[in-house]
Image (cartoon, rainbow, N blue to C red; front, side):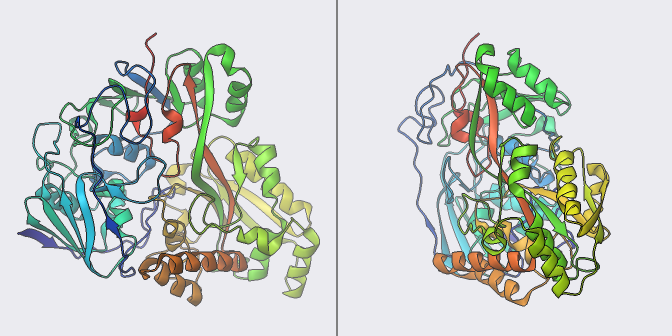
Length: 556
């Protein structure tokens, strides 16, 4: 039996460099879920790399002998799971490594991946039995020791990206036998199975060093693909892992991820056939043009349900937003519909609550409480609270993180607020490099952030945003509410899923009442594909994992 106990400290600002992806935090909160995960078997042909069913219920119609070229403006940092906590890097991780559990295409619940089955032994012990015969790209077998090694090195390295913080609820990971591993938690945690689906829990080979990162060009796992070449400024080449023994069906002969600096260059690349898929991110004007005239250029725009959100944080710890009426007045005035149509041309959907549509517990609580934008109602709120107007504050945003439309959006928000005569808004901006180290220090009156989910459980949109403990609330905006803290405890600990969702729904109501964060929009996933390319639409689901193996191209 092999294992190790952990006493990892939790940073005051979890993952401050990547507010698009943030912890759902287990920490000292959490409890058991009555969750039993049955084995998901493959077909009789093993992994069946080639044509046919993709192992997730969809059939590839393209040519499995074609190498797929995907263009993106995203930036990849590290593809060693211990060194990444950003969506672009994790997407490579999800395609090159296995996890014990995974969220399948179109699903929201964890299912076995490298595991044969997982179950709660008691309230704080989660046991997984591994499938035998799962192979790393170097031909070595994935065993329980690999799981122990993967968790240990995450919590040993504690990389600045802070993905390891997702694992701080683990007190000990124990190799019970060659194919069985047990996680002993600091306290019971209903969300823990979802944690095992994330990139932080990806399983690495024993050759990975215990105290430092594996070089990107030498990274490999037991997933469908292996890295053949890595240049984060140009392209990443992924070949099919011939030793892959999992359930996913690979419908291509490999993938090239091609990087572009400008959205306009990505659009040109898909139009000229330089890439087969353009995914993250095309400008809204480019999307509109491709929807209108793409067919004549052999390009189609496809969309899928998305749970990316954008939101405005109000610093409740000091003036002017320490007065609830000021926050409520902004919520009363804000016109999300105009933002969605005038700025984003309908490519985003107004969001009226902390949990986006498509995730359990979604309630449009702001819309329910405030109704239509109403300047007179906002003025009354301020008058009743004795607030002098106009209320002046700085509003911060960044030009290099969430698309070129973000500046137009904050120009529109400034216009809406100042048009009432109730507010005087001073717009400020910083580059992401500066912004990412500043937004959590309490110096900004109000600021913009975006968020991609770590996993599709609603806790991921509540815990790190609204808990009063600054070690948990990564926004560090001074917000605290005792009832909210109790609800978060229920969300993370109750074994009754109905009770958890009821707590989420009540928490969304409190968010609207207190208005410490004002959600703006959620965005569908959008990709442009060349004629004949299949499978892309299947992988654009709320999990926000782009599974390369379902995509097929056509030979030119």
